Image (tube, rainbow, N blue to C red; front, side, top):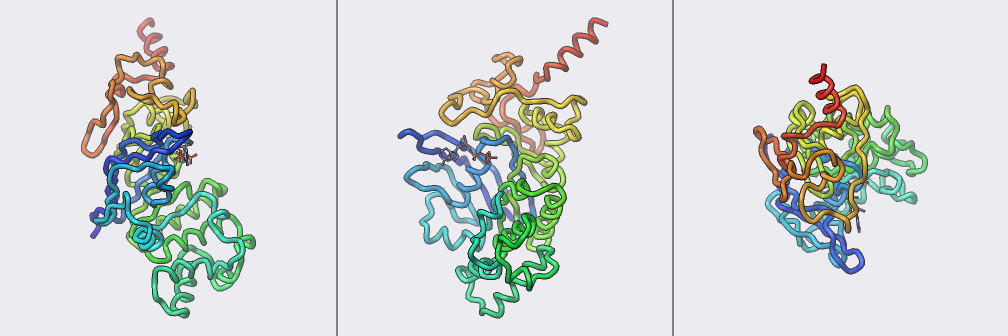
Amino acid sequence: MATEKILDVRDVSTAFKIDGHFYDAVTHVNLQIKKDEILAIVGESGCGKSTLATTIMGLHDPAETKISGEIDFEGTNLVGLPEDKYNKIRGAKIGMIFQDPLSSLNPLKRVEDQIKEVMDYHTDLSSEKKHARVIELLSQMGIVNPERTAHQFPHELSGGMRQRVVIAIAIACKPDLLIADEPTTALDVTIQAQILDVLLNIQKENHAGIVLITHDLGVVAQTADKVAVMYAGQIVEYGSTKQIFKTPKHPYTRSLLRSIPQLGGESDDLYVISGNVPSLQKMPASGDRFASRIPWIPASDHEKNPQMHEVSSGHLVRCTCYKSFYFPDQKKKKVANELN
Ligand SMILES: Nc1ncnc2c1ncn2[C@@H]1O[C@H](COP(=O)(O)OP(=O)(O)OP(=O)(O)O)[C@@H](O)[C@H]1O
């Protein structure tokens, strides 16, 4: 069913143990994904995107990580799920594509054996059927000579081919949910476009929900249905791709959009967001976490305990500071206009 919800992340926080103390890398995140939907998670490096993905995949050491909240995947809460049960879901019902295809592949095994491995674990298909599926998957990935590629080792393939193999492994068992963490970042621009096409085709054919993690807003504009903008472990804005690109509200979203020339509509000048994402130990305990990077906005414009506000149907923004936000050069222009 096109509107079936497959993932419901409710109030999820993930904290890492550093020097004996736990610090949040992901703080009270809520998001949902339906079948046939692509949700993009965007934000600078260090905002917690990968941590959220690996939390959903259950890839954290429980001794070093504290996870709270609920991750409802097709009716099963993944938080605290025993490893044997997780193993049945990972690879079969949830597939993951990592950024660097070379480190995701075993250099000593032929492509065919690596794709078969996941089927060996999750299916009881015969060897012939598995071979047929390998060839089908490699063809679906746009590989022109799948029999040849199936017999090659990773080092014999280009970066784009390797990423196609990684995607083939991730979708071999037709997962309902695919998590792609920066799937095109390590590739050059023309190959990036081909890999995005592959992902879009998979979504059409398999009707999977896709969580696409990226810092590339161009990729988001081309592919996503919905966007979650993450800053310092929190989602600061959430909405349809159209809402986020046409009527961005949160100062962070507006700053990200203005820092890419072709999509930011507020000025011709390229904008640089000053400062850095705070480290986990230096995360502000209260207030808008982005406030220190827009110091010209008075503290009184920020909420003390910023909440998500629905500004239009399905469009949520953290903190009311967006109401009075402006970029410094916009203020100068405004004053100049008033003086003339
Ligand atoms: N295992 C860990 N132990 C301690 N801190 C961690 C661990 N993994 C990530 N972090 C910290 O958590 C924060 C979020 O990191 P994360 O990798 O999730 O961000 P990201 O938005 O995915 O960044 P990138 O785009 O660079 O992958 C960062 O401050 C990072 O240093």
